[in-house]
Length: 301
Ligand SMILES: [Zn+2]
Image (cartoon, rainbow, N blue to C red):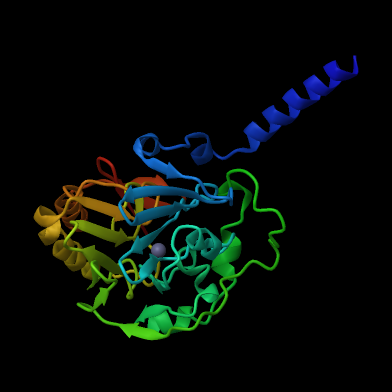
């Protein structure tokens, strides 16, 4: 009798938990992940995938941003391209993947990409005022990420939601468009891609045909509505990236799925120009306008 009660209680709890799940969460895992090589990691907040030899995607599927940071390993050192939400400890995950010295480079300094920068001493930053301001940390954007509809499952044990903020971090080196970072047997070229933010960059691993696109391109709604977004600059940046497409084998974006076809880049250029010329009708979404295309969309004011 007691076990029957426990059984029904368990069903009730499971169904009420499912009812609380936001829609985006119910659709996970995204189909693309079934084809990727998962690497075990002790922290359940993260999922780690080996995308190429020496290239790991570190994914945070339990928060709406579904942010993806990348560990890119060379012969002498490694670059961590973004540090994620700062909700759990990405440094501990990275330590389990490489013993080499790790430098942090950010795709841009929005809170969901710099959350664990404070844990690292060797951080590169773009020489922009936007970067300098964001290195001071903030609480508002971080707190907004914890709204119930933004979460999919439990936060890490011991996580202090009330204190959650983007902690200030120290920038050790200033980066400029065209700079190269030599990892030993692998070189990453910095491509300035202002638009989404003034300090947005992509990283090009030319030898291996890999382009880490940050938030300039991913499969999903691309955010182009914030006050720091410059749409004209975004178009120019995407034209630059699209010109690289014939030499690329893979795009590795900063949200949702860690693999995308380089053929998307020229499609994004065509799409954003159609939007600018008023040739596409948007749909309303969360008080904003969403312009839908196959595989991606633009979320604008
Ligand atoms: Zn962003």
